[in-house]
Image (tube, rainbow over the protein chains, first blue to last red):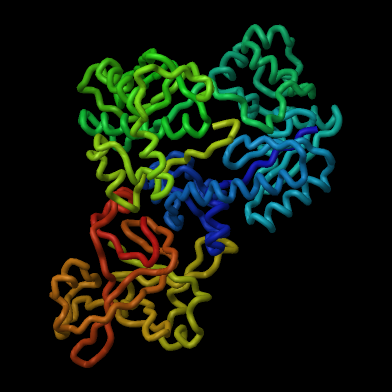
Length: 395
Length: 158
């Protein structure tokens, strides 16, 4: 049997751990720029505020709400406390995302779920919902439908059918709007309809991923609990660059910053890459991306930056378009230890930078090309805090 | 800037409620939430702020609002730039802490961990007045509240 632990409104709950007076009031956690709500309490949700809503739209809807600046380091600390506690009761735990874990449930009972829930509340301070079932998909469906602070166990076929009955297919993790539209076109709108559908038809319609969900919904586990994160196929760093920009110096500075972050990640995972992709999203134009092959397997800042800056003018077309988001993606990954070094490689500046930043602090020594990002590095209150949490199997 | 603050009712001594009629300032943000006491500028007179002064939590008048007979600056805020330039020296200002749990600016309530810095001065009758100190707003605060000034928070950056 497989268990699934899902923290209830995790970022808000994490803030309530250190500021208990935030309990029972509408609370919104603001994202990196102080503009959008990235997490909300159930009180705020009840008032009609949705995640992603700008603060200026939310305040008229919920004038009594309190807003908190995000603190990803604190959220990661609590997340790892949750993980450690679940590891105490299970020999195999998957760190699925910052607020979710899957685990091998040795005792699939209501009593066990309730006790784990109470332990997490008393020892970590975070309320969670828990599902236990024969498969990951069913376990997650239980915890999602038990929120907030609920739990449930599906131990037999009657309970499984009751869980799926009349539940929209979009409640299944992995069935998004597009898949739901395909299914709806064939009269499949609920989980029980999906589970009763012909397996081969589901595979034809939604490929192997859809078939895996079909097996899982019918109680046959095909998606394993991954105690060790699977090897990366890609490593990506990027995100919003704040206010959309047409300024070449600012956009280039963000490319440099994201390459620095990417190199950090490659070093952490001890991999190098043969390919680099730069992807840009614009405010009023379709996203564009281009890939470049590197000269050998590389993980050093100089080589990756050269490739990224080579791609930048080709991806940024037309140059009048305002860039809003970007990603720098390393592909064709290989273990760093197996890398064939070039005869002409010199000791890299990166090694020095890495040692200094480890000792002094992240980005203490960084490329001078990031100087235009005064609002990122020059404002201690901002820092564009990054949720770079390693070891999760999901995002 | 910050045109209002809120402090948890539990942090204020009972005698302050009687002395300053604070019970009419008590609000709550939801069933089960802790009660708070709001201090607004402008609000129903008298306009006041809680202040930590000489180790005591007391209530003082918030700046000088339209009292032309009083020579104190006609505002509720003190720019740190003007304080550092010596423009308040004639008032012998004393730095104090304004304890608060939430601040309010342009309809946005934001979390305050400990409190904010203020300056205490005295008028001609030696009555204490407290001004909230402000600094240029950080990018984050400016986006959040759409104001270009912000309070100086104690041990906290927004």
